[in-house]
Image (cartoon, rainbow, N blue to C red; front, side, top):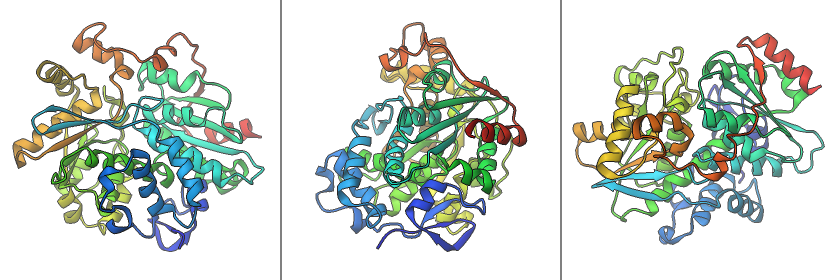
Length: 436
């Protein structure tokens, strides 16, 4: 039976895969969730640790999409999307780094963006309307989506990013592709970018006219593939291991995917949400009160989110009970000063070069072990350090980080971006006018 999806704001109303993926955001402003989370025996067979990463990813995807996408097509999508690894690197006793930056845009968002682009292409294969992909980014999402959809026929991409709040090379990933990718430089924060995207989806006339879809993790097709690499991490660990996963978190899609993976049989003992000064969720975990607030700019910019969309999905997975959420997740936050210190400490003590987001994860892992014991830790390294070159060289010295060619080649390209305010009216007018 094909998987159905429901809105977190309307639990009794269900839609099919095409509706959930291509419309992205329900009209009631909730978020789509799978009606059924696969049981462990649906995903993990006795020999699952021997599977290739592509096979493992296919089995996870099939558990969600079987009945909606034929096996041959789904295998092809997964094989094309997951054609790079997520290696686990041990940097100290019981401390492991899961490197998620080996894809085209050097960030973990490649897993979800590349799968989603192929799934959307399959879902629209018989449509004659152009698909408009709208995405807000705090740094890495935009680059991954732009790369995944660049020159894909039948699609046009609009990326909104906050002016002055992404790194120089991240900005070049957003603003130098051209063709079917347009970048909007918003005079505001990531939260403003996200608010503008939601406003477009909630405008039913505009959404229908432009055939809008989202590539943020509000889109269930971007979120679910992030479960792939949690299982890949477990594959690379001793069979008896039940690690603590430490997840640098901003919009909380990454952690949500981990929680889904746990329900599907992922061997894990606990999750740790690691944030910078934007500590809305760690504060909730301590107090039981969720209080979104304007985001604060930090050197770990991809986590500069003051109103994380996927928090609602986390609540939904735990019956909206604080005690259940806090029983599964602990949260810690750290400022830029501590993050810089961690970058230096990791390099000096282990020889490993860790980016600012991973450094926040490293600090959270230390704090967890101090409070809870010597668990086996897996820290998600979500982006390549070269994407934050200024910070890395300030802490480790010039030339300390090698820049991969696929990023270095962007430095000399001209930035092309549309200047945009943070008000909904002008943005919706621009969107309507550009696409007419």
